[in-house]
Length: 334
Image (cartoon, rainbow, N blue to C red; front, side, top):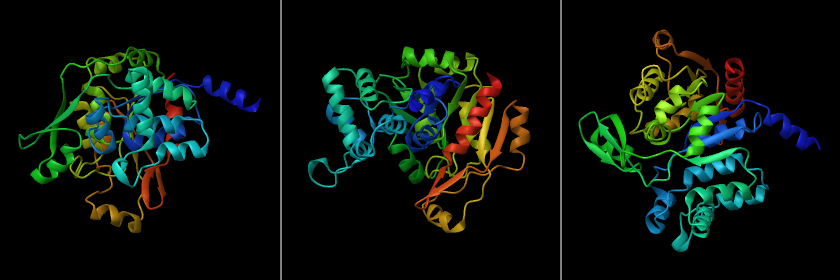
């Protein structure tokens, strides 16, 4: 009875739409589901690397990896089931492949529809809220570097940007006309808060904004728009970026007055943890001296908080602190 009452209470909490992909988004979702059951996660399907990329190539299906991570983050299932769905094969022809990806691939074959496969997977795993692909079209992510070179393929972009020694200037998708799901548009219109990130700026968050009319849909929605910047830069993607650089990239691919809030980490990271990241070419995303002033001039409120959670030497956002901040914004603006 207590669980039912708890769920009922959560169902009365603000409606969240969270947009992105990858590890950052799934970590946020694990925290957020403790505060509300009204969650719609809109997840990128531009991935073409690793096990997801292989399934995409072999079976002609959309890549399931980022969606799988978000489904598991919102799932209410036994620990053994999560371990099973997170299991990655280490030998044979399935080496490197994730069982959860294969599960979604099987659902896709059974129902003949990626959209239906995701819904049925969510039902099986008793997911809190909804997980939706950003589009049902087979898309290729492309980047134009500052030196004019064009790169095609999500997994290739950071690798070749490093080789070229040039930053990303702009990204786009092929085909250039793609459509969001009606459910996504409906969720955005009814949301109490719309959250972008955290996650890879150009390859997880931004691809969702490239879907036809999605920027206008978000812009015209009544809900406040919040962007969560990454804690660390990503080699080949955001080298040398500070908070303002991340924000400007979002605005460049949307509109100058697209965001209402930006959440950034202000907590210092222990040097012992940082050293490994620095060796890999990653550095903390810092606030510039005038970032708050510049953001204010754009009518964007900056929220700087200590948001670090370090587990097994990996730097992540503290999803409980982050969720509390987002809940405060949603209730204040509702």
